Amino acid sequence: MRGFETAGLIPRANARCPVCRSLERHRLIWLFLRDKLGIRDGSRPVRLLHMAPEASLARKLTRMRHIDYVSTDLRARGVRVFADITSMPFGDECFDAVLCSHVLEHIEDEQTALRELVRVLSRDGWAVLDVPVRGEITVEDAGVSSPEERQRLFGQKDHVRYYGMDFADRLRACGFSVEVDRFAARLPPVRRARLGLRDEPIFLCRRSSGD
Image (cartoon, rainbow, N blue to C red):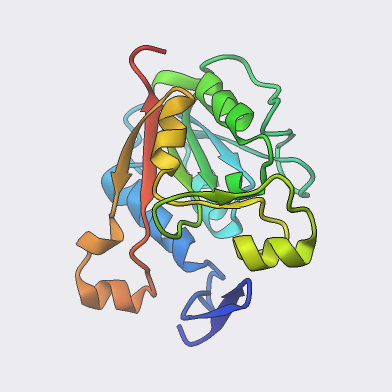
């Protein structure tokens, strides 16, 4: 992979695959789903909710006959259901799995969105949540509304915060139990380099036992 992609103003070498057009985080999530969570195991049906679906992941997931795949977005074309993440038209505990990558940094009412994700997730289900993380403490300011200032503070003009590792605490406060997985760091360095992966955390969530 020889191309590069930009996030904000920062170029990332080997970000986008020239064949499948996936970004490094898409490849990392796929490996995590396949090797950690066994998504290809067809021993039982899985109803999966994919928020703001990435095309490279959607192609793989929709080919699996044991997965009832439900894609959703507020306005993107081609999704199965148009929905606002803060008020989703799904019943309680109706999904076995939720995939939500690089969505929450766009959502002003983050806590309502997280509670909705908890609500629709079954009690024995899992959710893979992925956000851009920088440092330990989340940076946000509700008073910042200009695209230029959001670009400067949060890395992209349509972001409303830059997450830190305290994202795990924000998830727990909304009803999730959380495992922070550094999956990429456990891969052999040669494989990680070949796939252009970065060592970024994946937040594996389940409904907390007290919920």
